[in-house]
Image 1 (cartoon, rainbow, N blue to C red):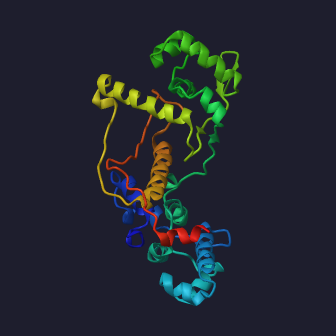
Image 2 (image 1 turned 60 degrees about the vertical axis):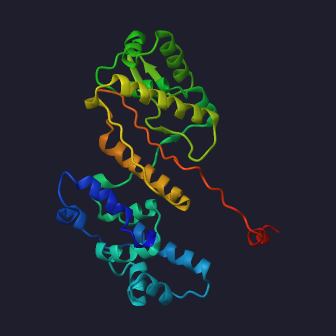
Image 3 (image 1 turned 180 degrees about the horizontal axis):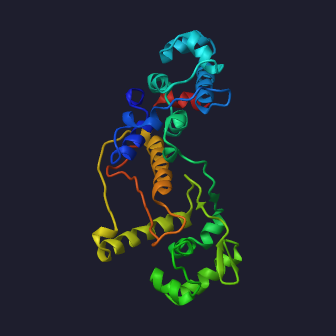
Length: 297
């Protein structure tokens, strides 16, 4: 069960430190900070108490403290900033707070090394209309090609690097300029929005078609690219459907951490990283009973 699992942040930290040593031996991880009124972890603790109060208006501060395994006096001092919310306290109470993966990252953030933290998502969200216009993979390939070492603002050079026709580059380059994603200043090319993303959990034909084309790119890579320059891996497991939102959130957290560690502002090549989560079994639909329909009226 989720409440018995270790906080998701430990999973991330364990993955990060596999090559560099144990978390317990990392001084930056062990370092604890005194709380303040603006400490995010304390705010999460307060929010969890308020959420519990909404579910049970009769719940007292003492009752909530007992549920998470600390005294009411200690809880009061924590939320008032008079007592530090140390790593040991966080580890003890986190499994009982039912934190989402993102909340777990925020709850433990002050105890993570600076390069383990998840930055504020400052990516520009593409509108459906704009994504429809630039949904082909080479548009995002061009936007990232600009950041590679030795980039040349020459159509033939860009076409050769991406392996597509000159006419495709001409059309895409012109559209990116018209839509304001790139700007040319003499011989210098400026990318106006460093980071872009599409909306999550939105059924859109252009996004679906883009994912389908990713499959073709993966197939082409498997056939043509040496194993030393690519990676393909998968695993099969059993899951409850109620945990799918949690799984999606964990994947997005990993993606953000992966890009922070591996992505470069100026690098040698343009790569694409795709993740997929899909069922192998035929999904069972929830069968409604007469008791369920009583609440529809």
